[in-house]
Image (cartoon, rainbow, N blue to C red):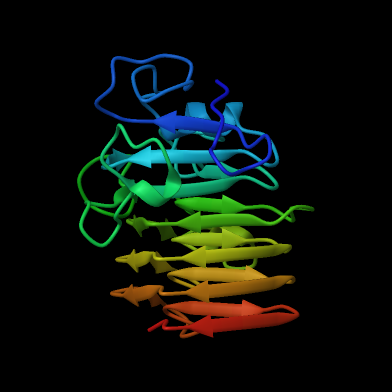
Length: 219
């Protein structure tokens, strides 16, 4: 699943397209059809290119509420592709439908959705999440634990960039309905958060308890 990125030094691209026929992620033609498969394959320094479509997590829990998209240390995720682009700058996230990362893994309704749609652990290398919609997380677990925080995106430390995201319709029992970050350095650029809630009132859109937080064109 290696693809050279022009102008880069040994950057590996892993391709994801829910409409593809399936393969090892080495090209759009042979793209993975699930984001889970791409994340299991990706390593630090890799880019994951995601074509428009809706993707549901299963890593860590199958169809249970502990399922999540677990982003490996140093991996960069980019949505906003239609499929077929040869370069990162060929995509147009402003015009192309973004990739939708959805926590709606159970029956209709939110109460059996996953606790965290997307999870970034205490990564040693910086991660980038760019050009996606993150929606449908429902963190209704133990009020004293992580499962009640960060329904959209849960970050457990490290230095990461969230860019060009819409974080919408996520709910947490304790804190950080949209985004929860503890520790580390986080940059939010062109992030739109709406319709998120935290039952206990600690950051419906964002809860941050770390070293530094950079906000640019974020609302």
